[in-house]
Length: 231
Image (cartoon, rainbow, N blue to C red):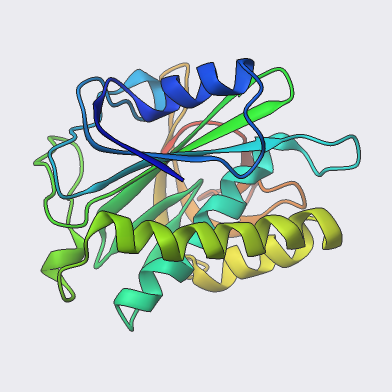
């Protein structure tokens, strides 16, 4: 586990390390990022005091689909948060954690050949003001936690859930995700990559981890990619 004072993006650095032959299980944490990024190319505000870390998974032929590592990361992160805050957090598809409806963290997966880099940002001490969604920090709901201590716990929970994903398949990960997610029937809006917005009620996940929305017509719509918001 390596820590640097400052970098542009831990994900970009880990991708470079992966290309150079870094092994699975490597972690890189930065005290501060100057070019942090979230899903769909959004900037990720990165002041000191929060967690900015990336890890590496090397895909094997028998592994479940690579995209389902987003569910692995989400359940591992929720479990780590639960260590520091008894009530835990709620998972929102595909992999955000919410506390009282406000975003606590983000997860970004990027791939280079057999390497999947998983970047995790958690608002431990601070949270940004965003125009399109409420945000929060762990410090607003629990005792202050330093990034190094939090990452020690997260690395352990992630390794354990990654092993289950490999040995038992996606089913136990998917079930844990559903147990920790917002309740069935929760009203959601999904904004798709082409700009379409779809409103519906949360109706679970498909066997491969895609979101199912129950529309007003009673039809079910499967969402494979997009931004999801609570209504």
